[in-house]
Amino acid sequence: MLTIYLTRHGETRWNLENRFQGSQDSPLTDKGIHNAMMLGERLNTIDFHAIYSSPIKRAYDTAQLIKSDKTIPIVAVEDLKEIHFGVWEGKTKDEIETDIEYKNFWNKPHIYNHKPHKGEDLHTFKQRVENAVRKIIVENKDGNILIVAHAVVIKAILSFTMNISIEKMWDPPFIHGTSLTLFNYDGKEFNFEMIGDTAHFLEESK
Image 1 (cartoon, rainbow, N blue to C red):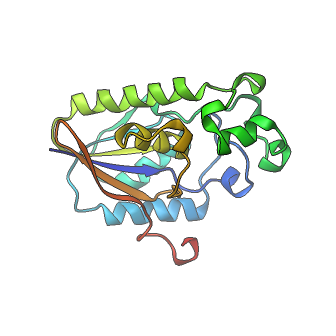
Image 2 (image 1 turned 90 degrees about the vertical axis):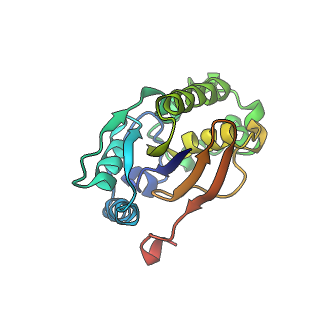
Image 3 (image 1 turned 30 degrees about the vertical axis):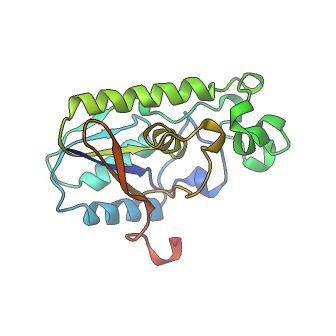
């Protein structure tokens, strides 16, 4: 049986500023770094075969912090990159909240139109994330692996593994930075033990 540990990158500067990051990047905050290290301590006794990470620096840095000084390979996977938000990237939510497609993205994702702001199609995005997870599963028949990615990527993974429609993708729980999701794959079914757990967080981030 394969056990998959799944986490989001730590808090970043743009998270604090409420800016859309998507395929762009900003550095981890002190809290983001600390919580990643705390997750590393929480997972210290787990024997990971590999860590699969988005190549975007905020995720890859988080993977390295979790790994610490262990000799675990970190594999950068292009298809685990965050969804591309086009011209929204770098802008604050206040700057784009009047855009009808911003409202559709969060409230009616099944009719969201990426074209006006030159973003990535949500259906295409979801399929590339699913393809990445399927490939990782093929490469790992059993044991433990860690995937470090992004909020929308994790929601896409949950959508795939839990058979959740795009219309319901944003249903709770919210995926906090460095929260822990844990599920198993027995070759036929995905079975979840926890989703978005934050037991290792700093007190003020709860």
